[in-house]
Length: 217
Image (cartoon, rainbow, N blue to C red):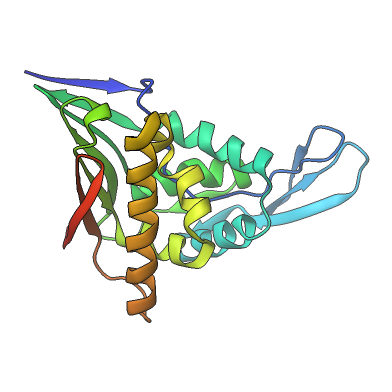
């Protein structure tokens, strides 16, 4: 029997980034006719965003933010994305997932909380981890959507691991290290071999913590 859980301790923090002000004070938001801007409590202008953006424009905002985001800002994104993931348990199989449009919206809510994103794309990809049995056994299929692959290629594996593959860090000991190292290595080869943007997501298969193969989603 299948159970659907939300916000469980098995977290797939999938995502990209935002423009929150992190200074000595708290950021506030000022709304204008066709844009919003974040302002520090000292009154200095930080960033202005339109009230409405396309998904492509949201991607630009996210990438710009991620390129300079610090650990505290990434943690804010992790927490927001984590609240949007789904965990499904079916027998001994556990799936932790988030759709691209949900991840993008969650990230943008951190960056520009008063900016709405038009969902004009016909299809949304999914990034997920599918565990076969206990996580400590290391039998997992890592699904990474084309959107997430493009973000990871631009921002690097460490950002992907921090805001998208956080559950891997919950696995202790040798198995956890093997899965993370194996994924980082294979993604490095994939990124080197693909010069253009990814059109299709990939599935990376691990058994006993060891990387075995990849396939298309």
